[in-house]
Length: 129
Image (cartoon, rainbow, N blue to C red; front, side, top):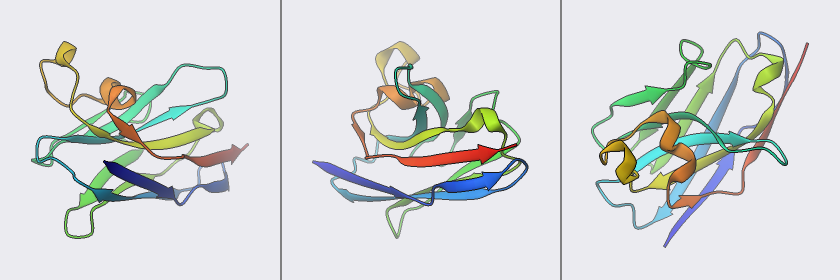
């Protein structure tokens, strides 16, 4: 079983920055993909970014160049640095871990972040214009 705890959300003005963290515990398989997705109430999950076991990253176009995903294997912690935040980035952000779906050939793509096996309770990001 995997447990994920997100932190770092908050409220910022447009153009500001936030850094999300996700502390992972439990068994993390070496083949797992780790990533972030976001979801507003009543809406579909929206992939944001992922990172695979080799450190390769994949980003959604709507965050590319503004967000950076990284991980610290020694601390079992995943990060999402979010810069140049926009009002449309407002959402609940979730950390996720798991096996990449077969539809992606078993590779770790940003759109698969919401399909991974485990996710945390989420952290709210609010951006004011």
